[in-house]
Length: 177
Image 1 (cartoon, helix red, strand yellow):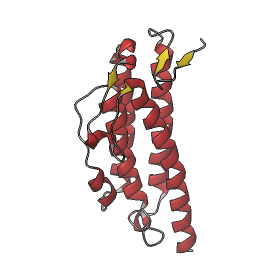
Image 2 (cartoon, one colour; image 1 turned 90 degrees about the vertical axis):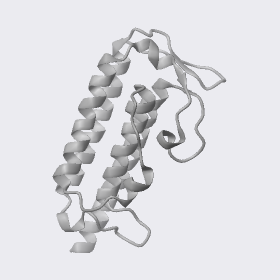
Image 3 (cartoon, one colour; image 1 turned 30 degrees about the horizontal axis):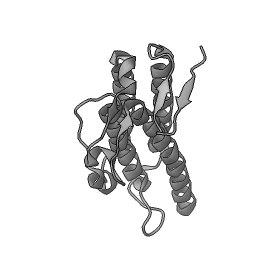
């Protein structure tokens, strides 16, 4: 099935077939794949390197994973699915001492929660325009957006930080040898 998206000058996205389950399945599949890759990268990072930043001012692997988890909860479950969730962005970056297995399990559990939320979400709700709270939105000023933007933003954010995470882990391993 071909999904047609119409982009208007108001920057609102509208799917021409709001009953299409394929859109929700794509969001779930992409987020599941990204979160699994992030979990795998965390799991193969040696425990001694998990909370070490590769250089002054950089972010550690464990903190990146905690940030991805918090941001994805906010964007996918909070903004996208309309669930009542909270987020503490400062605590995400201050995270340390959490074992890799625990971080990875949280990321995989989040993927399952997102899949369940998307399966239960009425596709028409993807076009609902919401203005997220500052806590959920993160950096910048919150503004009105359709719920589907929450899922798209979560995908973009996870993809960016997957690359960031892989580069950080590579730098740490290179420094350790």
